[in-house]
Image (cartoon, rainbow, N blue to C red; front, side):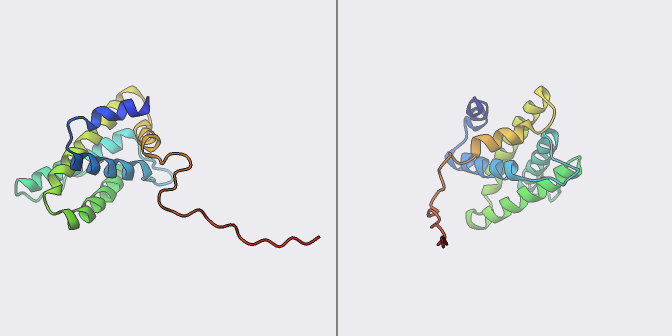
Length: 152
């Protein structure tokens, strides 16, 4: 059911845009807020919307950094911006358009979840959908057991 809620956000995206969406969504799912200021769906929507607006404005040749309405949103935005900057180093400036579109999808998803609940349901949803499958450790090798000494 979780995947059925995320799939509409991916609909109509190119392969590259979908990859950017998934990378940004994974960063959003992993984002840890401050102890007393946890990120909620509204913060995610504001952060994604502000960063998307900043990228769209820059695409028109105007340098203006939009800001989210909350401090947790600003922290998430800074983390997402850093990730986009790192991706842009290898992909070029055309990534900004794809990132803006992916961020708009994240914003839309967070707004939808904020209307049906209160809290961080969208972040939890992304965490469940993007979590590795049980037993899937990627390309890591299984740890070798440490030698043990049994003394009778």
